Image (tube, rainbow, N blue to C red):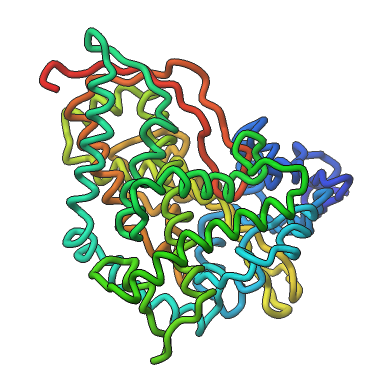
Length: 446
């Protein structure tokens, strides 16, 4: 076979995609590296594999053992195209590609699995439910209603670092000492969670998103039973808040959701609980992981941190770069609604497409020097908050909370450096650092 007439062909063997151009084999892609939570914990984010896949003209079929088959979507332009056609690429059957073991647990779950959340709704239902809270999440509303809480939390977190320092130097485990606590305080406030229940809420969200990580998952021999217990704790916690806000409404988000209406009718209990659940869990873990990943990048790139200290007006663009760099929402699954042609490739109804935002945010055709961390990157059309129908509802709040913490850090902390090896969470959907040992020097002014 001549190179001129060679065709790209694929071969699946035990989940490994072997690719050839003509008779020349190109480096293998192990599909488990793309989707398995344990692979992320052991080997980190699969940037090398994504870079290989971005060079190919076609979507590559993957059939990893223990998971349903899927097509990884790794190019920025392809993810944008798919995301802007929610009628053709559906979310309603689920947004994660779960292992067969995890699917069995979800199917048996009578709690969280029964809640309806907007992130798994298709049009027109998604648009109707999104309207319930969309006006609360505008930039103007966030500044008016949440900014004082955001600034106070950021000040307190950095103040704790200053107080812990001895002789101007200190150490902390940033992922859990600061990155967890900052969004926890903000979201607990807007959702009406009493301060004394924040540790419980933190544990619940870690158990939910870290269900595959031995250090974070709920303990118990029966994972189905553990999932049911987790759901009941969430329901009990949020149901109490819902009942209170219906009896005693205020102007906070908790009251808005508790009394929300869709098409003139009150939201059902499972939809209301689902709104609380997705607002807190998605908002907390994504922001926490972005902060940990961003501070890790600043510690590894001291010149960029110094640039921020000299030019604090760059903080908004630094936040965008942190979101691009960390890409805490690693992927979303979409299901093909009908047989169709996608750039000359036949896709069938029911095919799973996994949209890897972490790959799109390193796409060489979009970003100059994409593997460099630059706080002044411009332009920066990252997909860290998604795009299209399901663009992140809480993007303005996430940006505000990160900006506030960065402002406090650069004004009071002179330098950052790693004090040990960062450790990745065993998760492939919402990804981030489980541990970030950090050493820092406090400025004399602080």
